Length: 259
Image 1 (cartoon, rainbow, N blue to C red):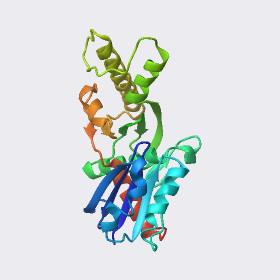
Image 2 (tube, one colour):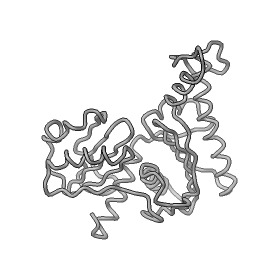
Image 3 (cartoon, rainbow, N blue to C red):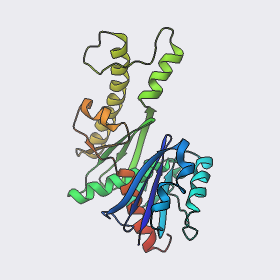
């Protein structure tokens, strides 16, 4: 039974059509569109797809963008849209957020995918998950599957624009990351990169101390490739974590008759 997974971020919509709703399912087709272009999906690339039997999405771009996606999904009249949202507990993950439903759907879904990756590799252990996009989140999950909490900080672009708008004479640079920056462009680029890396290292130490076990360090997000080389410890870059989480959720929801 074919399954359509959709990830709507702040910049792009990414989609994958799978042969079925289960972890490890083969991808039949996939693509990505900037949000400005999503109104052409139904008469464009989606028009050539076989009709999916189920759909589950993750959207952080707001209700207006979600409504635009629904309009495109009308291409398949029998397909009922479903959207993931954080819950107190689901798919083996326990949510310790003060108000569980206020946790971002992308964070929740990616953590479900990250924990599934960890469990496939051997005995349970903590997971530190870094998502690098428009914003950066660093999530701590203990070995029992409890999301302990996480931090949110600006991504590279937001940091650079803040410096440009708030400081006279500074402009968004095309600098490089280096140990001892000797020009303004390198200084700004290195500073933002090291700020993110430093937050990740601090969260690693918190999680290691709390669990008395070394965490598995995973990274995802469109800008993950920029951060991975400069981290203070090895992080594995897995770009598909949100889709992996959607597959886990879809399998569970189908089994319960909720998809």
